[in-house]
Image (tube, rainbow, N blue to C red):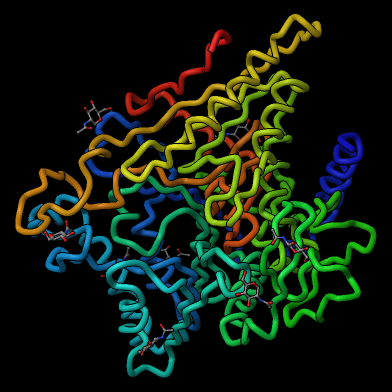
Length: 511
Ligand SMILES: *[C@@H]1O[C@H](CO)[C@@H](O)[C@H](O)[C@H]1NC(C)=O
Ligand SMILES: *[C@@H]1O[C@H](CO)[C@@H](O)[C@H](O)[C@H]1NC(C)=O
Ligand SMILES: *[C@@H]1O[C@H](CO)[C@@H](O)[C@H](O)[C@H]1NC(C)=O
Ligand SMILES: *[C@@H]1O[C@H](CO)[C@@H](O)[C@H](O)[C@H]1NC(C)=O
Ligand SMILES: *[C@@H]1O[C@H](CO)[C@@H](O)[C@H](O)[C@H]1NC(C)=O
Ligand SMILES: *[C@@H]1O[C@H](CO)[C@@H](O)[C@H](O)[C@H]1NC(C)=O
Ligand SMILES: *[C@@H]1O[C@H](CO)[C@@H](O)[C@H](O)[C@H]1NC(C)=O
Ligand SMILES: *[C@@H]1O[C@H](CO)[C@@H](O)[C@H](O)[C@H]1NC(C)=O
């Protein structure tokens, strides 16, 4: 299996080098930058040169749009809400908000409003939003304008649970943001975010737009006519899925109203990983330019949930697993995530899900890889996380166990990321009393979702919990581009080596 993958990889690289003339056709060159948000008051975190800020990139995407702007957001809170007692922003003063950087959120909102005034066709697709504003901002942007459409899509009607969770901007079908940042002022200056900005990349943007259109289409369909309850033999629960799902026996499946995904007649149940997922052989420029690598290096997109796959794109789970497995012998894999759970969070009953931790243990054993994982510790930390992380750390004990003559020299190391102030978040005033909180609710957290090996970078929107891969919408961009790989490693290392991390304790063997 691995051999086949290596061979395929060689083939992909060869194909990539032959397709240069076709790529040169396009006059606009595809460029990429990594994008970050760094919370205020983190003076000891080194800045990485060449990385853009999310607040700027969101404004550029809106400012530079001339024809279309498509945005997938979980929820909208670009405008701070310090006067609403139900808001996590409640009770902070104007000068607090300025210090927090809330004005950047207003600038982003204004830039979308300006684009709407320029008569750009704007489509805003979101989950129902979150307490207390829900759909207020997209509704306000759409109000009285025929060029702005807003849609709410409830994925729980289609998958039994789950939400729209992808964070994607597409401007003029050409410039794209994919990453962890929500359409929330706090995501620009109070939450640590990582994403990618692709500019002039219409071929990639077109694929992402297909995904956008699929979500848009779902929002207009009656889910009760297009869903089935199945007894899912992969995850061993009964659950609701779209009627075209590969979790339904082929004969009983409906015809998908969405573009086709590869047929898998002899695989059951569910979705297989692809031995040859679609790879783009587009030359992606990174600035400052590095001309020592003239050949295009392959890139890909991955999507969740699997029923929204089309063409030969891989699932988001495969995107993660293959990135973990791409680590070279004795190499280093870096994973950054807010959440880590080896199970589902929102299904009933719960599902056990070992895909990512298995892949990590496999590269520790077989490739002697060093795996570094950063997990967020914050105001809304999921307690069960610690048990799963410690069980993963137990791989270290097994790896060096002499009982079966293991000679493995790989290692997993896990650190919690604590953004200073993380346990002082929430409204400043509650029921007329000062709370002592220093920052608004849902802030001071490392929220990026990415993995980077020695050769491959994967930048996503999904938390590392079952639901995000099988019931919730997510999009990732991955690439073998050397410069992106190296810069993403630098971003990770700056966090990993900062004073804002603490090691997760291993279980002792006598426990
Ligand atoms: C976006 O456009 C507005 C209005 O022209 C301008 O004030 C703002 O500075 C622009 N933003 C960026 C980041 O260039
Ligand atoms: C978009 O706009 C910003 C300033 O508003 C500019 O610096 C940038 O080069 C423009 N183009 C792209 C593709 O980002
Ligand atoms: C879209 O915006 C309009 C106002 O323009 C609002 O009445 C409607 O509720 C919004 N729809 C959704 C689905 O958010
Ligand atoms: C599937 O099951 C849920 C309850 O678990 C029920 O509400 C729903 O109506 C069922 N849907 C179909 C299509 O049978
Ligand atoms: C799941 O569905 C199967 C048939 O579709 C049924 O036999 C089984 O009892 C159900 N299990 C649960 C736990 O509801
Ligand atoms: C340029 O790329 C080469 C390999 O492709 C890499 O070794 C080198 O570090 C890169 N230089 C910079 C400045 O990124
Ligand atoms: C907040 O976290 C810091 C660092 O772990 C700790 O020193 C402090 O006691 C905590 N404060 C509260 C109120 O929990
Ligand atoms: C405010 O006080 C009321 C009554 O004492 C209580 O029910 C409510 O939960 C409190 N609200 C908050 C946000 O603490």
